[in-house]
Amino acid sequence: MTTTRPDICVAALYRFTQLDDLEKVRGTLLEQCRDAGTKGTILLAPEGINGTIAGTDEAIVAVLAHIRALPGCADLGVKFARAAEMPFYRMKVRIKREIVTMGEPDIDPVRDVGDYVAPEDWNVLISDPDTILIDTRNDYEVAAGTFENAIDPKTPSFRDFPAWFRENREALLDGRENPRIAMFCTGGIRCEKATALLKAEGLEEVFHLKGGILKYLETVDPADSRWIGECFVFDERVTITHGLERGSHVLCRACRMPVSPAKQGSPFYVEGVSCPACYDTRTEEQRRGYAERQRQSEIAAARGEAHVGAELSSRD
Image 1 (cartoon, rainbow, N blue to C red):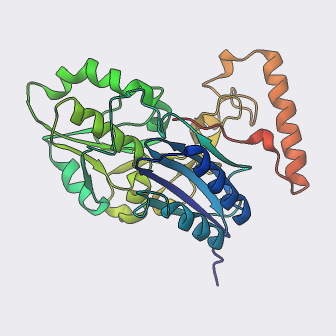
Image 2: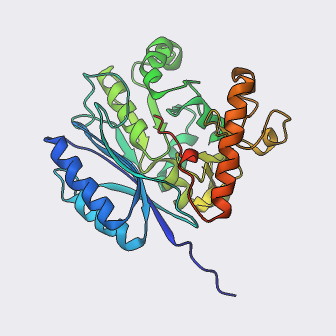
């Protein structure tokens, strides 16, 4: 029996590099993406480029070639996955102050960051009891899955990470002047920027997972994995597992939070309308509106059309 490969290529990319004349870069990049037929979101900032796009293999190759021609982007980091259906509804290229928002203007990830650790070497580093392992992602992402023995900062946004570290620094370091600290995130961008923060705070033995969780799940054999659970992703797949296979979580369309299989059995979970995390924070009028949106989405799906009201919002 022959297995057909999913038609859509999904490329998650980022690069810290100095970019100038962002309006010009945005215009030419958006034109290239539209000509190629890709969809997704790309962020541009003085510190670099970050985004996820999807399309045919040929379209992705064309757009990546364009991006790699930008200053400092020849070594652009890219993680690939496959999808049976287009996971995005539009193509957006936006200019931001930061490609991943930390709110620390003096931090320069172009100049000074921690050391990369390849996925195949990650287990050795985090198995050392002297290594402090920190998950730099948001609390709802960590809830879906994380590495064994990782510290969960319980931060709702990456913007909260600097304050969390400073408030907990003494307890984390436990009297050690220069402990070994390893950090990770979904694709590598947040943990890379977090290492720049810790370096600026005077720490030297700082490491981050190259390619992030996505590369680890793609590279490391499940039998050898230290990963527990699933990995939240910011597209219609919601979560993924080893081999970058689609996971078991679904997305609550009311609050945009991932809903685990266990919580899908809750009486507060209604597809497209509510979940246990948001039921008490929404009014009946809001839920009626969500229900109508879900109805329209189902009608569009039955017609083979995309309903843009179901689009994922971007989050740090």
